[in-house]
Image (cartoon, rainbow, N blue to C red):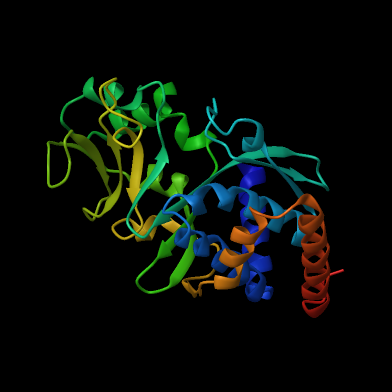
Length: 278
């Protein structure tokens, strides 16, 4: 995760210097919710990949999901290449509302069964350490998740990265909790020494779908375990012209698309000039 953490730090620095560029990009991404509630998630992948390619010159990105739209075997959505070190790493984009956030789907259903081998209330530090070292919990070290969080009522958004290392170091209790309000299956919740919520592992049986199992957290309850890449919440607005552009593009020809693309590329060059980017 060293290369990924370096990328996140560079992204955070870039955003602090050029906030208008990320605000424009995120506004366009979340405008896609006007087309469909799930449309923004897919388009966020290609938008962030292009943002990296256009503005972060030490990095290059490839949208790996483009050939695997229907059945991706892995959770990663984009591949990022450090042009200086030549290191490559994959990133999973998550576009979620402010609240519950899925960090991993746990496709092989290994996390919950691993916790079931222990007591329902795990407080022994050695046992907790062994759990995190178990291959079933490799997700804590292997998946680079970049969450784009939106608060639709407040028209604000935030790029919030879950701090896995802090979460592991701070966990002092893992507690089994049964069915609850709006929850059909039990969960194991992770708490710190102050009793504050960190994250949870949801039921992983074959009967549970991808949205019922895996590693989850909550951007409201577990706020202390997130780092904001955007340095806090930023306001966004809907770009209604973009919706019109999409609707017209779908009934126009490639010739029209090429003309529009040339105009858009010129606009990006102008944005770079205004931001003093070469």
